[in-house]
Every structure is written in structure tokens, then in C-alpha cells.
Image (cartoon, rainbow, N blue to C red; front, side, top):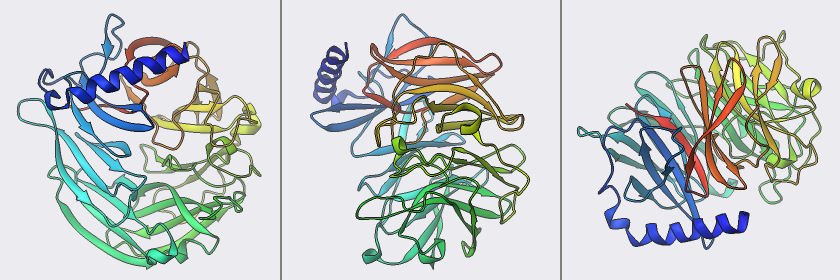
Length: 401
């Protein structure tokens, strides 16, 4: 079945490549849901940003034929207000905004080209995003550069080159795993990693650098040894903000998600809004409770999280394999398995493709029979399968008015 599915994907890639000039010619305007489809053929991935009016229809597939925008190079996707940002990676050093035009079609607007890949990206208020650029290694310079982007106009408001990378820590090279704004500060979580061997020799400590905003000056480095590194490699999932402005930090330290060792349990810490220390009174040892590690997560509200977690602690390195879905309560410190979604493999080092509205979570899952949208009811943890997606993977799912 997997071989047959791979043949279908390869054939679809050929068809799409032959009709690139027609992309958008049959697109239906004002379809609310926007998906980024990754289609891989001959070791090359092309991205198609498409729309649909329904994520749960089982009588048709979601695909890129005559629908949407083609994007080349490595891409990750993140929404802010009514803009979806297409963020480059793996050598791509630009970010593009995707918005609706006056006729209801999605269009690319703005194209910010950075010196390096923008490794941090977060919303700071209703109108602005902050971006962080860092040299890939010491021989490319030693300063961090922060940018502020207008979400609506996609204008670059200002940039600040400041603070040597060294204050983040003096252990190896920092690989950023997340960035969030809260209480006048930018919080940057990272994993110190050897840039030559990619070994994580300091996986037993949580690291978060704190910068003031908007002047982007280094304030302090906070550490905690109750759990290991915050977030996981290239998934930008270290920090999430709740409705009170408090930050939750997720420690992964799984070899399946980019660590060379796993010395500490997976769990959650907390930083109260505007504070420059971890909350000493909050800790949630998720691995002690479940025997599993959190791989990917989305904050839903009211203390609840939708997550993909490992079912095997001995999964192969970098594999992001054998995951199940759970609803986690960070306040009550409980975890409920989702029924109806099979054990599956994740998308590895990229942002979690997941979307929540009206008490439900929608997430694409790759199964032996193809990629499908699953809808989970948050209150019960029960999921049902929806539309099939013709793609190798889904890089993001959003709703744009």
C-alpha cells in the first residue's frame, strides 16, 4: 500500500509540474481553509498552498490541481491574524505573506529576504510579528538580528542588529526551538548543539534567552534542570502562550526528534507573563505520568493542549515515528488518549500542522492508505476521519477569512 501511494504522489507531481501556468485558473474564491501541501518526487519537494471549503468531506480529495500557489524550496508555515507566513528554511532565506485579495483569492504579498534563514517568528500584537535571524555558524558573524514586520501591510517596520550570540550560552552553537512574546519580552528557547557532529551534549538543561522588545536588548539567560532542552530540532515548538500571557515550555529530549541523548524526562515548565525566571512552583513530568515524550503540541485554551506523543522511547534517531494523539491538561496535569486516530509517523523537524476551532482540532495524519484530515472533539478525545489529501505531507492548515 505504501508503494502504491508513493506511485500516486509521483504521478501527481508530474501532472502538477505540467500545469504550473494554470495554477489558480479554477480556484474557487473565499474558501475559508488554507492548506500547504508538500509533494515530493525525485527527492525534490514542491509546496502548493491551496484552499477548500470543507475539511471533512469524504466524497472528494483536497489537491493542488488548478488550485492555489506553487512555492519552491523548503518552506514552513505560520499564521498571524489573516496572514499566513511562508517561512524559508534549509538555505531559503526569505519569508512571504499569503493573504486574500479583494476578490477572495489567496495571493502572495511581500517577500522579505534575510541574510540567513529566519529562525524565530512570533506575533507580538494584533499588527506585528517579530523575526529573529542568527548566523548559521561562528564564521558568518556573531550578532543576532531582530526584525519587526507589519502583519497587514507586510511592510518591514524596523530591524535591530544587537547582542552577540554568545550571551545565549557558551555551550556549542544554539539551535533555536521557539520564540514567544509576553509581557514586554521576547523569549527564545534553544538547544545547544555541536554544529559539526549535531550532538546535544547539554540536553539535561532547559535554556531560554530573554530579550526586551521592541529594542531587542539581551536581558538574561534562564536555565532549569528539572527537565532537559526546551522544544525539539527545527520544529519551533518550545514555547506556547496561554490566554493569560503566561508561557508554557515543553521539554522533549527524544532521540527521535533530534537529540543525541535523552538524559531527562519529557515535561512542561512555566514562565509567568513578563517574568525572567521559570516558575518554581510549576512542573509537570509528563513522561513520569505516561511513559511517553511529547513530540508536537498546540495550545487550545483553558489549559488544554492537543499533542502528538511517542509510543516508543526506543524509536530510531530523527525518525519522529510511532506517534499517537492526546489531549493534555496542563493545569490538572492529565493526559487523555485520542481514539480514532491510528499510530502514525510525524513530519519531523517542522511546525505542527494543526488547527482548532469551535471545540474541535483538525490535523492531517499520514496513514498507510494516504494522508487524511482527522477531526478531534476536544471535550471527549474522539476523532473521525475526513477528507483525503493528495500530498506527501501537509505543512500547515489554517483558516483565513
